[in-house]
Length: 215
Image 1: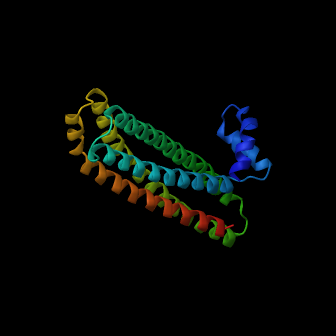
Image 2: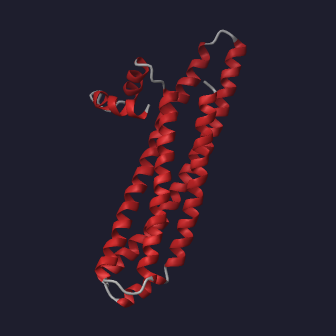
Image 3: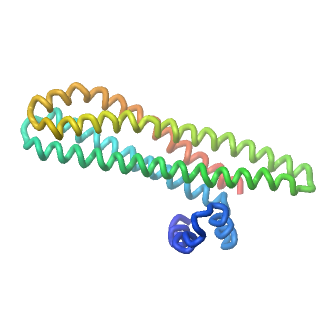
């Protein structure tokens, strides 16, 4: 599904970025909002999995810079800066993926809500309304956990940013010693971030399973 949407994207860009037209065009070729939501939740989950690996890598690099004796200081700075830049990119991707999930979910739930009025059979309408309520509740849990994990990112980036800048302008042994004092803070922030991201990843898997089971 994700590959199909990627291949179709250039044609859809001609629509001028209008999301309603984007979804309408996909509906015509048999790709429904529910399918897109599943695809985007999976993409958001994958981006968080990659971010977990990246922030763990950044922490490992930071530890090697401040704890390993010897080595050329410029090279150690460049290695840490590379990890920081990669972490920034991972953070941007996580935010973008969450926003994409929120966009299609809002469109799906609005459509679902409006189509409840089209039922003539009250029993079927009530069943669909109950399913909508259940799906919305689980979706809220999912997004809350994704956003909670995302909020943990900035404190980690903030510490990394400060230390990279400090090291950039103070390439000496005293600078390395100063960075050692921040290691425990960074480690605590990263550990909490990884836990929150794992909760969001697990919730994404559960949400996708339940949404697909409700077809």
